[in-house]
Amino acid sequence: MTGQLTIPGDTRVAVSTDSSRITYLGHATTMIEMDGNRILTDPLLRQRTVHLRRAMRLESRRRYQTPDIVLISHMHLDHLDLPSLRQLPPAVRVFGPTGSGQVLRRAGLMNVVELQAGQAHSVGNLVIEATPANHDGGRPPFGPTGEAIGFLVHGSSSIYFAGDTDLFDEMSSLAPELDVALLPVWGWGPSLGEGHLDPDRAATALSRMNPKLAVPIHWGTLCPIGLKWTRPEFLTRPPLEFVRAANLEAPDVEVRVVKPGGALEFERSTI
View 1 (cartoon, rainbow, N blue to C red):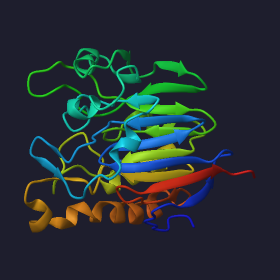
View 2: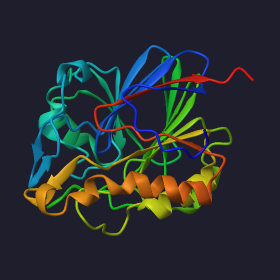
View 3: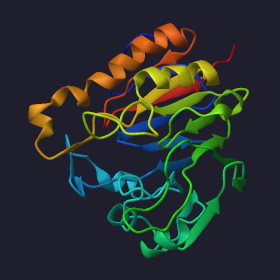
View 4: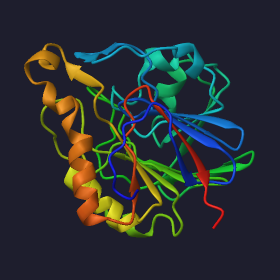
């Protein structure tokens, strides 16, 4: 049902011919299984980074440590996490933004491709295309500098992974037939800084892109130590607000909310 709030463990909707699966591991980390490939986005596979802790444990990490492709949207510490990347096979194909190669190789990853927005690279039966993003992409605190990007994964379905971004002009022309949009709707604290989508702006993004299916990400996972207990609402409220806003801004888009650790199985409509 269009716009209906569903928080599944596993569920199925009509979107692609071969069965495909998206697992939301939390924050900006997802595992996309499509056309025989396992694509891991912005892997954060541990319980803590800097001053942030996971609100719940990440189970079965070993299942996600052997992807075929890794996508890195930018170099912030909660998106390019060196200890998590060191858990991956050194030969895995990694795509990151321009300037990220030296950091990624410090994690022992040797098969790194740097992309600028608008560039694309074929990997077997998939095409990985870098998209613009409206977000600071440098590596704190002392560099290197680099842009933030998102990704379009083209195969039997087309999937957009936004990484971290605010609205940008090119959203309306990203992909003429977009199956799935993985859109950030929050961050890791009770407030947002510049360069992020909140639930209302994420709904505006939907109205510009018009995907068949939208899944909110970048919520419900990380929080500063102590805030889980004193201000827990920011861990659960953003996707609910996103669904309400999407009903108004993009009523024709199917929205599914997947809890961190949950999965969504989808098939392309045969209509």
